[in-house]
Length: 393
Image (cartoon, rainbow, N blue to C red; front, side):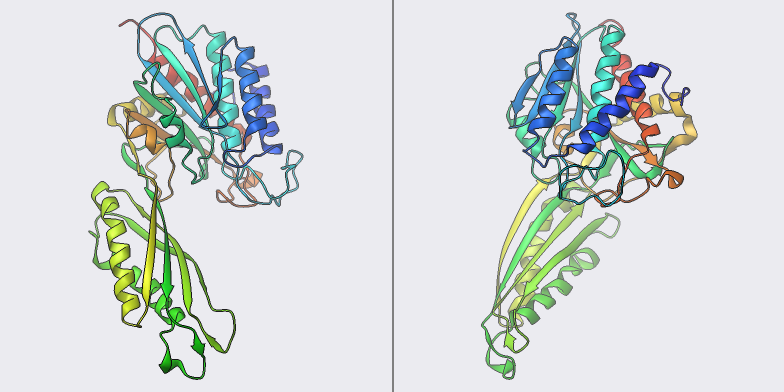
């Protein structure tokens, strides 16, 4: 452990774990993080900062200002939990039925707060400003966009942004730091197939929305196989299909819900049109019509080359060059909204350990963090902030 976090004191490491467990015991869903907001604000005030609370409803922003000219670096943590019922019997398990920190946001908040405390103890920053951003509602509810709309990238203007994410599919002691596309865009679509109900014994008399819906599901797969460049990763998944209510009744409607994912900007822009055209054509063959709702959640996470090189160098200095994994995922993260506006880097810190049972997938009811990863993430944030804001103009 010592080689991973030489800057942190023993008491800071202990507090880091205790804080993460407190957040884990008291999870709150997106835009409902009122207790979480209060804990974060109290911690920041104890550091002598003046946090702004209620940003985008439950977000918190604080600025550590050196009083000297220099750039402003944003460090961001998400805050929200998921509507998941925890199954593991841990001393710090969720005390809120049906809600759980199943994606590591408890660890992100504890890490950023502890990094702020360490930087404060070290008399940082030496120049410029460090903007600490605790964002609500990352899990598909547009928290980043709401924060940006309320001026989180302004006053003072942000020059660069960094954020980490603990990753259970990566062993503790490793990190994934990749320039360019790193995580996919995330879109949400709903397709309503409209037919005409009738008797199951006389299927020739009415258009069957269930059959048409099944054809739509199959046809949507051709967006990946035939309508986009095979060298550019794309995902089109239908995750829900609801139609019919009785064994002897032809369904008059079907509702499909799904998601599209992509790395490439042009592909991302083309997806709504592809979904609508394919769905309409497939349903029309069966005499049905469709209504399509396509919602943009957020674009792909694209890391700036220069900022990524800075993170890679820092990770290599702490964990060794061979600790850096070339890992990308079609999962998404709304940190992309910050990185599409200012140069930055979003990276994974490994938190998986089979012996400790911390390799369950993210969003799983069995998810947990290897708490030995927390000092690593904290040390990385401290070093990255100190290096970025070091020296003279």
